[in-house]
Image (spheres, rainbow, N blue to C red):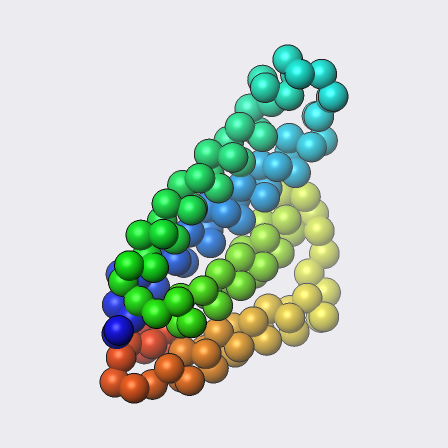
Length: 127
């Protein structure tokens, strides 16, 4: 099955939603109290769960349009989004090792895309 561009795009959008969910979870954890009423009214946690659900729907839809072995490695770009978002929202540092990891993820996902060359659409061709 040839991997379609829309499927790659959906997986990338999925990673943005799930990475944003992690940020919401972090905000929710900072105000978390172990009282059932406060847990179910913690809007950050609820928002994170909703973003995860939306991300799951997008991923499932995307899997209809391509090869699992091409699409699933794109999920690792979530690590990139989380590093950037946590740096922005929480002041986490992005040192040389984190930047090296980000570049390795990009190269790794690209290599997986190149490895699927059989005339089908790859991740690297979609960019």
